[in-house]
Length: 624
Image (cartoon, rainbow, N blue to C red; front, side, top):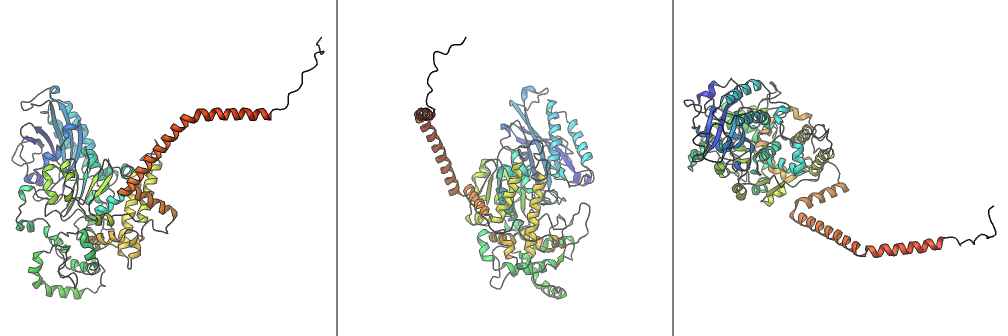
């Protein structure tokens, strides 16, 4: 893909693409600038193999039901690229009879098209704001052959976004945690912990703009995630490139390094966890002195996990480990003797040379990290982030090279196949469906978690009716909410580093912490030493003694979430309505009699209270 090499220094925007719906060919690329293929023209329909799903992502399922819509999507990197390509698409439809120039292939009553921006930077909201204006102007021309405005858009975006840093409010434009909490309330924290566990999570709602908005807003709660944590989030292969042969599975990017965690295996591995944590940092740091290419070997599973189990159930063993074990044993022994560190203490120290923006390249994760090691490397090694997933990508849900995913879908077929996801988030009803009872137990919120969630909900709801402060004040505002989740994550990480930290971590939920500690992101984060974490106070931000308020909070949470509690709540509401209606009916039927009796008694008592009558004055008194 030569054009990408030539355009590397020109700007953050790679291409402007127009996707249309052809009555015979379906969704197809109609225009691209610069051309998507090196030797083709602007009007070529050809696509790189890695981007074969681009038309179906830009023109989503059910688009004909809406006049306009917005889509965020991710594309895998092309050959030579090592980062995700971020796509923003604005869709509109117009009546064919309104066109000034009607082309021969326009046979339907409406014309549906999307204008897309493919970018190197995850400025979703900013790109959307600019793209919506241009899309509106493009459709107002009523002549889709007028492509000069699209070329001007390419030059304008690269000029205005050149040198812009991924810091500040422009990254989060259009992503409102305040609205998310108003809708999901305390369940936002469940979503937060669900992603930390790297589970397969599917968001479901229509239209697409609501879908991608909710999904990306949840990710924005993780510090640094949108800015630097999604660069490896779309490393997948199209269906035609994936073979059932196991030899291709081994050659897939990072496939042999996946950590496949099963909920049912947590109990079996809990006893082995301490040994894994103690041995892993030393094993990973042995290769840290090699070149950048050796970073991928830092996360290879340990060949020995415990004396009782020679092969762990929650790791996929790399065959190359067995082949290279013999020649490396002597060298590893010498290197281990050179280090005199306490067991369980990470000896790989993250370089603290801070570059522009306060981030530096992570040794193991490969991501740009801050001084706390954030963002966590969740979307790496086959864990995908697909804000919108087309039906043609359905195979990714069961692909053996996909470790997990956070994906959004509008097609009902995704929702019906629940066995392919650990959790389904129904955005419209603010409901999280989890089939596995063990996972539900792991994600149950502790008392301290409920205090934290209730604290957020109260601050968000207090000023929502204030016309002047809604969404703009500090407490209860979007930035404030992100700051609270940053504090929550910092405290969790700091607590995990403490010795004898069982009591500290109990406030986060012992089952959750046990599951999280064997996740990929925790193991990579723990393999490095982050000196800045010493300034973070360990312990849950809302730890403390139980009170009556906690009992009420727990009862309210149980009633709102458990099926039995919902049934009880519905029954109570039905009974309350019946009592009120019955009371009104009784009052109307006997109200007149009661009022008459009351009036009679009042008049009788008033008669008794009156003084005796005074006799008439003498008639002889005559006025002159």
